[in-house]
Image (cartoon, rainbow, N blue to C red; front, side, top):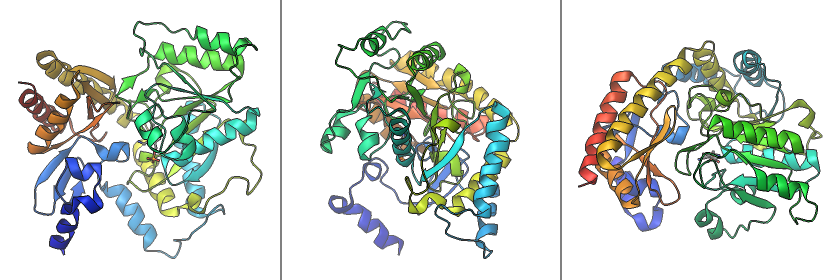
Length: 418
Ligand code: PMP
């Protein structure tokens, strides 16, 4: 019963999870940008499953597509085999995403989660180049398995698992050192100098906006300089679009605005549209070097996710309407957060609907999240010391709901900053 369920969650010492700590309620149902608890309290969602619910909760069109599929005998487990659902997804992905953007990628289906996509990218980069090193950035987040954790710039997460930094060089992300430089002189120097002791890497892996790392947004010119550096040294550029992709920043891929074309792209989170586990790794055709069976996995062929992903691509990406709306709402959010920050010492970070308010004192950000929760608004914190209030509403949120949430957040920030 519901009572028993609550009591299990209350025994925190046995089931402690960070989200249970910050939001001590039991959620029962959700629709669009709202989540409701089992005792009927409704929250506005500025979290979106950490980017897994860009189209809101239980979108009726996506849910219906899944229900229709489940009602047939075409529900099959396909692993690496061909299935109708897989074909329809690949065709829709080509039609709505790759062809309109002039992109020529092979689609690998690496497994259910974002970290599977990152591992796949790292592995294929090593195979394709015959090199071992990877360059990643300060405050990067790429996942919780061995390879993705090794390129994650958060020592608390890494050291706890005993993951060393071998095979990895950490470079400063855009603006990490302050100033507006776009040069990568030191990488250029060590890569050119055979006596530097630094091997030429297989790949550079980067997020265009660091969702977990504090909503740091790289400038387009910095990304272009990075892409140019990689091209000159024949180092593969991997963009991890697991969190920033699927429309979050105002274009389907977050790198479109910078006009760069990565060699490899990681996508997951909102790809299935309905929150089902699903990821892809896109790679330039000449990088697709695996023999059958060389890189496999049981849940690479999760057909229910193909079905909802296909429905999401058709529903939201057959024209530019959603992307244009995200850009508008992103401006609205930026203005709202800047106004809140002006009175309270918070600083806007981010791009589109992947944004945040940075506070110098991490305790302020924690208090803001708690005050927001008390007012019926779900926001998380982000950054190396959880010093950024992270704001990620569903992309489908109405302008009125976004304003309402910004109002609640403003009240929360004022209550948390005496
Ligand atoms: N890359 C990025 C940029 C992410 O934000 C995340 C998840 N927060 C991951 C990879 C890992 O995804 P998953 O949790 O699905 O393994």
